Amino acid sequence: MMTAKKGDQIIIDFVVRTSDGRVVGGTEREGSQTLTLGAGEIFPQVDEGLTGMGAGEEKAVTVPSEAAFGPRRDELVVRIPREQLPADPPPKPGMQLSANGQDGKTIVLTITEVSEEAVTADGNHPLAGKDLHFAVTLVEIKKAA
Image 1: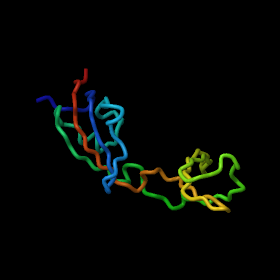
Image 2: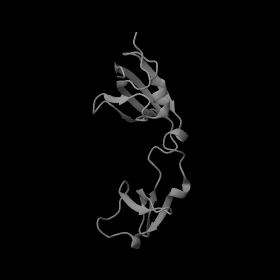
Image 3: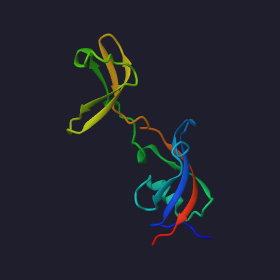
Image 4: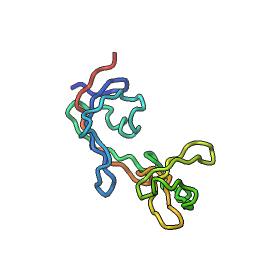
């Protein structure tokens, strides 16, 4: 049986869940994904899990939060006075804002709470602090040239 190795182009189906079972990604909507094994196109733990698999095989791989989107950082949750925000559109939970971080890079903040005086916004990735559980099926292997 042919098994996948670094450099092979492979086609996979997968579902990603958090530890509480919530589905947060996968190939159900967009269809199977094609990637090159070992090219850094998916988390290294999943890449490693796919190595040595044969077509039709399934595997469960966990990517710990530290290796996925990192830990949740309390300092990325900020309170912004309403007068510092544009009046239109009115802020509401789930809305996203852009801000410049201390290093000059743009940070995307998601509004989590709105009060008369201020909004609370979170700059953490929505999956920060969460372990990701991949259920992966190797659909096809196209050998490296």
